Image (cartoon, rainbow, N blue to C red; front, side):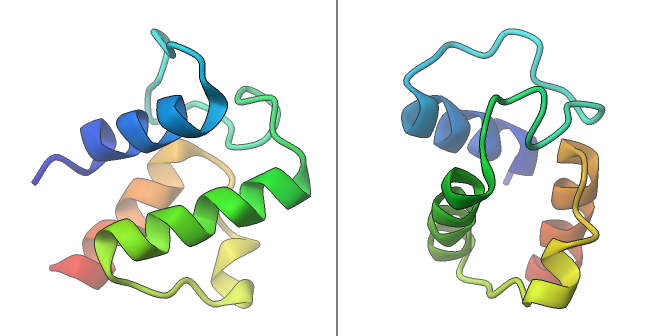
Length: 77
């Protein structure tokens, strides 16, 4: 499983945009143009896709795509 490629597909489907500069340094809100409500909806889709739950206290720590990838890797593996 390639977490970053799965996330890219989820983000592109959610935003309706092609994301060529999608990498571990991408900021989840500022670079993606998401507000907090959109990010919450997106996190719900990510949780469903990977079969995990991201607690609110952990969500606050996820600033970059790399943070999210590492969190998913730790929960899935």
